[in-house]
Image (cartoon, rainbow, N blue to C red; front, side, top):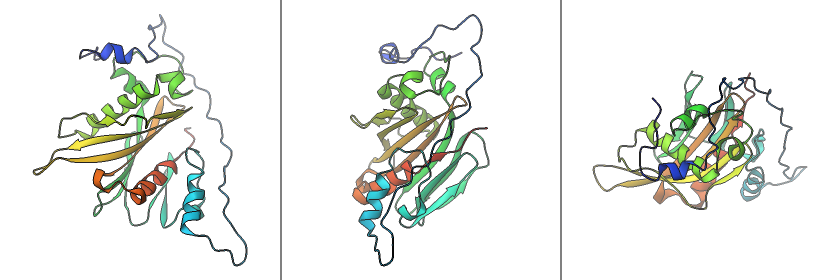
Length: 253
């Protein structure tokens, strides 16, 4: 059986989702084919004798934030391109890379064990996300987060809770979505969350920047890029957010 408002206040929060009464017949499973996206190159200075500074490279890279298009290699300083049948992503140079041969769940993990920075990519069911919240999913779930699923802040909370359940957070404290960090633009949802981890010594906290991309097959790709809260300075933040924004979902066939 599906969960049904397990705690006080749950109904109020999730009534903001696009809830539907189940139809007498199941909704059509036919989905429109994905629309090809035009390239969105990021121009950089070129020509004989031209010197491109690290600052210029990073600035040019961040001009492409949020664009689900391939990122030219020249805008990734000391980065590695990882390509999979379902996505491609740039990860910082020196990060280990672990690929799983699965179609759903955790597809890819990358990171630096010395700095405790981790970047992972998951493909998860949009239907399951709603069903776990006690909502009956109907209709097209791929048009946009706010039109197809619900209010951006509420959906971010659902994603954070799903991540806690998947990661089996040993501290038992729900991750908190940071106020003012949530943004939704069509099929793209971004936010930042803070997770408290239990240790033998003092509790530690991790900051995770998140990007979720709706796919045409009633699923979504999620990128989770995290580090220790104490290390979330300008350089680390730029490195993790660049990896986050470089994600390119492949056509789902």
